[in-house]
Structure formats: C-alpha cells, structure tokens
Length: 104
Image (cartoon, rainbow, N blue to C red; front, side, top):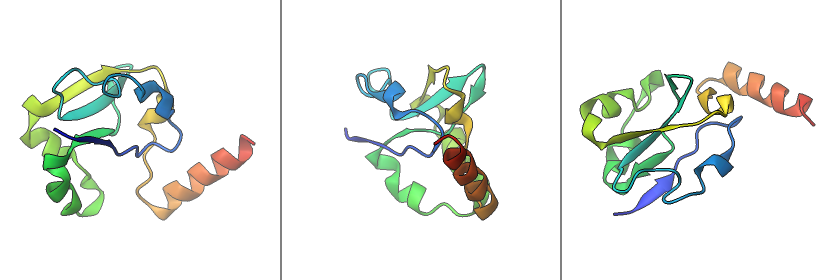
C-alpha cells in the first residue's frame, strides 16, 4: 500500500510528520492532524483515493471522502496550529504570503 504526503498547510511544519509512516498508525489510509480537538487538513492519503481526490471540485475539499470512509481515517494529535491553515482562495493565498514574508 503506498502513501504520499499531500501537505496542504503552508504554515504547518512537515517535520511533525517524519515518523513511521509520517505519524500514522500502521495501516492508516488517511491521516488527519488534530490540534486542540480541531481537525486539520489530511496530510496522508493512500493511492487508492487519488482518483476520487482528483475529481473533487469547489471548496468542500476532501470532507466528503473522509465522511464516506471513516474507517480509513486516523487522527494524529499535533501542537502545531499552522496545520490548521488552509489556502483555497486567492485571498487566503495573499494572507499566507503576507504572513510568511513578515516572518523573514
């Protein structure tokens, strides 16, 4: 079974995912970070979901897939609140870019 990292959290730290396999319990097909009880964006997806992910449209993202396959989802607790930041619109991209440039 193959896994890939789809790290859709530009303010998050990928280093929190560098364990076996990237923080996921053995056999997890979808890995979602949880920070203070709030789910972040899934960062690990098994290849079996790639076709369905590619067919997604709009800002709903993968929520419907996660809801359709709850048995495949593993939550991994993190403390990095940057993992909650999502960039789906030009305005969100401008905000993140400004934040990143301000941090230099």
